[in-house]
Amino acid sequence: MNPASRIGRYLKDKGDPRFRIDPLLPYEEAILLDTAHYPRHYLMLLCAVRTGLRLGELLGLQWGDLDFENRFLEVRRSLQEGGRVEFPKNGKIRRVDMSLNLAQELKRLKLHRQQEKLAKGWAEVPEWVFCNEDGKPIWKSNFERRVFHKALARGGLRHIRFHDLRHTFASRLLQNGESVVYVKDQMGHHSIKVTVDIYGHLVPGANKAAVDRLDVTGRNPRATGNESGATDGSVTPRQVLVELRGLEPLTPRLPALCSPN
Image (cartoon, rainbow, N blue to C red; front, top):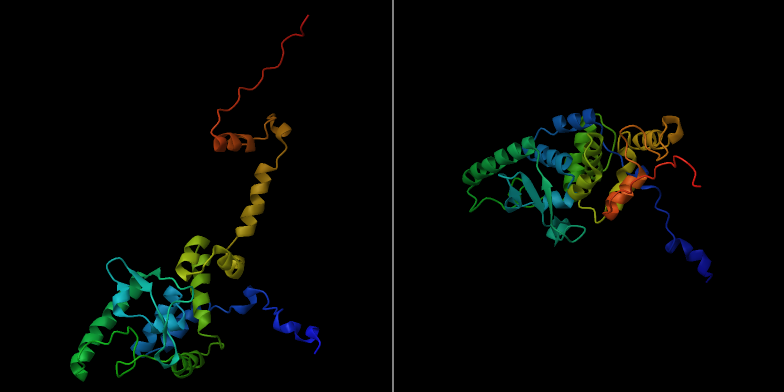
């Protein structure tokens, strides 16, 4: 067999990551949440667009992972089909901030779950934050097919993947002016390069701000009578270098008043 005929096995062009995301716009997010009337389903979708958790991570949330006082949750596990529990994708526990509204809604859900325990005669409150009517875990395929896709259709929204709710969270943060470092931490990416590769094009005005700074640092120093390259109130590259090296700035040489004999 010609080895070249199998080159696709080793060279797989996955394309630009920017073209593999399809986040919801703010008004589309609102429509999606409005169509998810059932409390369990609404809260799962709200949690998805407010935390950026993957579907398996959402289904793997337990009440002990939530800190209502400090308003964060810890992603400790991912629940897969058939009840298989795995570590999060990067194998690390991460903290994700909870918005005020999300924390309040989850508190209400916990209270409702305690009332449900008494009404249904459960021995204890189910450990899973999101569970079915019997207190058992929810399977990913069932939720996507029976809840998520139906909610999209009911709201007249385009077909997207559940994973695009994670992209919705990240894109909203960046477009609101949050730092890429913060987004990287919330998303649990193993490096900031991953975050920039996927979402860098969504940072509003980032490139324009970079080229605008060239207008300041690129002025002709002689036009301002300053041979050091500084404009009024600016810091020259030499001054920055002096500060970084911990050196005292050199006293400028004075021009000779007269030539030596």
